Image (cartoon, rainbow, N blue to C red):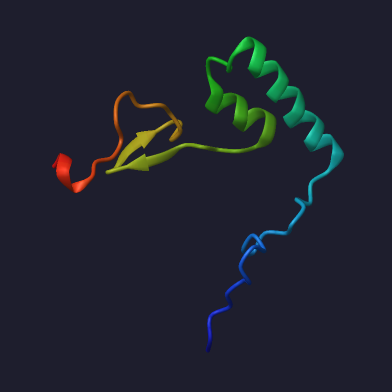
Length: 83
């Protein structure tokens, strides 16, 4: 069986325009505007779970990770000359 590959520029398997309700779009827009001026909630993971039903927790090497998105300080990659 030949694997299905989307034509270049089609965005893969996702629709060109997201299929979401107006209420959801309004909630995301409200959060975007609020977070841009007031910052993120102290417990972002709990907020995302309560507001959107999105559990962003995971685990790494058997250890729990509450929120896998974060900002690390410093350079995050190296090239061969830097090793």
